[in-house]
Length: 374
Image (cartoon, rainbow, N blue to C red):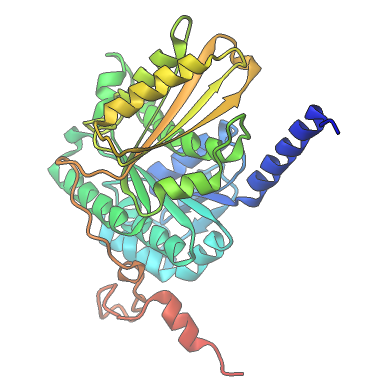
């Protein structure tokens, strides 16, 4: 009995497609920076995900092209924002946990994106992320840190927000805006610089979501992403495209030396996910050279490598490589102390007489207590 290879290929594709469709991914932009990044993702046609924006600034929400909007903290701020105060941003999120939960329910993976250093991004993003974790979603934060010229106080608030996120999400990717100064040519406008920052957040989300939503010759799906990112703390993501001779090797080299990554690149990573997109002419030796270069750059003999290949004939002579490195600690990043999600989502006191977060019960515990006995 002979096998019909064309039917087998059809079957393999159908199975992969079903798996993709079953993975529900939500991207939530928190605050001005996060909302701008989500708008850019939507405009760029990022496929296979649902987009939401969360903000305390009603005017900014009204101006956002993203249709799914969540206003938080209206009683606290009257829709005027929180004035760069993360403690108010947190209280605003706690005021509307029910609305945030409605958005997050049903997701298997949640990206929380924000610009740290601001009030809503720095204060509300950890609450949103904690709620996603409580709901059982694989939760990944992709955030930017402010420019140094924005002052030490703003940077200090950003570091606090980063630590809060890292303590509760599965994985956090932080991108220092200062690196934009190295990447952008002199004469770049201030507006264009911040647009580039928004696009960097988009790349961080898309680099991961594309692996899940794009069926490949060697397929990496949600289970691969989950195994690589669940509870892994800090992560780095780089993506690059090269063409011509040694395109795969050059793309790999550029991806792990991306100037927008935190210092150190992939050195010390415990896990690395590599996704290669190229035409069917890509050779096995080219894949070997690219993956070997990345593995050696980790300087970790025990690193776990997982790679996928997506065949796209429109790539021509170009090769695109996305690298996601997870599970390491750096001297320039604050150490992670894992904290329960309930630490970030204590029930908010509506009396105004007590600071937010003084109640011991989590939002979910209080909901259970309020359910009537049948």
